[in-house]
Length: 148
Image 1 (cartoon, rainbow, N blue to C red):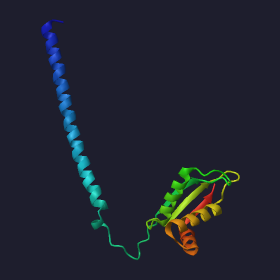
Image 2 (tube, one colour; image 1 turned 90 degrees about the horizontal axis):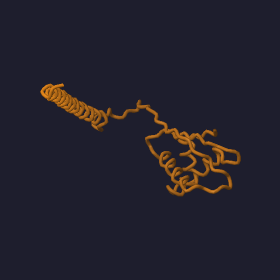
Image 3 (cartoon, rainbow, N blue to C red; image 1 turned 135 degrees about the vertical axis):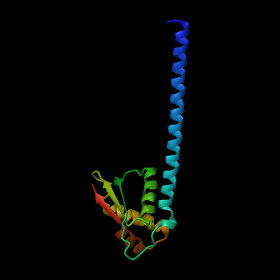
Image 4 (tube, rainbow, N blue to C red; image 1 turned 120 degrees about the horizontal axis):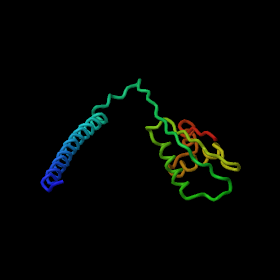
């Protein structure tokens, strides 16, 4: 190839590369506009002002479903277990959840749902200064435990 052709080829490649970069920049700007517009749409959809007024016929139910490992009877309690129990208790007391469903992963010689419910009742009374009756009523209404 002669030097003149090579410089023309380099110029052509450079021109194509610059055009491609400009096109990508335009596409990125378009995506930013779309993202900004969608962000506004989402904010408007969840804004409190746009929610319909609560009514007596409002019957949407929200359940929190999780699994939890059963405590081995007589075994050492892992420190993280207390954190998870506290999080579960917070979810049980959350008025936006109609029920909290816990699938209790069990092994032999591990606590059952009955033991777990009693432990959550004790923790609820400690944390929220509830009576045994108040705690048991709340757990009866909101906590569903399944041995698995």
